[in-house]
Image 1: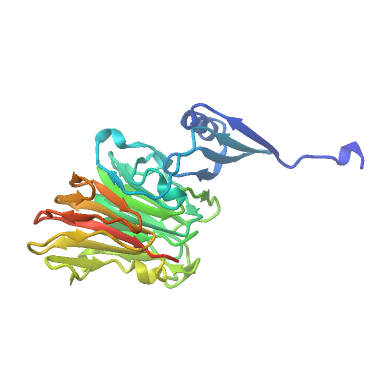
Image 2 (image 1 turned 60 degrees about the horizontal axis):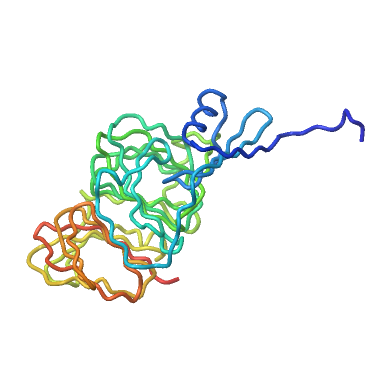
Length: 317
């Protein structure tokens, strides 16, 4: 081979940086690089970028420490939120991540308006988003025009469905739960949303996109007297991978057992209060959550008349 025949298509560079956010902003805003992937979304540590003749990997921050599944209680406070992807603020609801299996995030956007997002998709087993407060407009691949998710609504985002967050209200809050805990987010610079195709029955990784709207949902009597629930339909859309329901009180009710034999039971209080009873008692209020591993004997007692909570169950597979 002659020297003139030798060439390098793309140089690959890894850059360790102390302040990932500032470094990323420089390369995107000033140097004109494009984000290809970011990992993880709630507290980015690795960002893949591309520029003219170069592929750049930014690395910064410490890995999240994982631990074996245990009873995890999180209680809301203003200091619990940190910077995440696309300018959103994240609060970790499952510290330790059940050994790296699950991540639950309380995400908020204090000041509404256009969201600095881009078309992207996630390498996940499952992921859903439940709107706690305000509203957010999102557009999805092959699902038609942008959709407005309001408080009480939720989206199931199947694996690798392209989507983009467009805008939100002030004080928008959502709960996002996904498996595995740390997963890659890939950017698609080619796709324009909404797509020309409309295919609401399309499967992505064996799952279907779902938009559950609270205004159209039916409430059903729960097994526990004094409680009723609405089923989001996520269990059906995922083929039983995960179940998501909303529970609320209809009258006086006794203790609600949280014991189970599944992989995870997760409850987030949307309203009201309850007492978590285990070896000790913890008063839970709006914005608090509990993640229960299998085989643990605990329950919720002293449920207030206005109790409402999001309940997630991940069966053994």
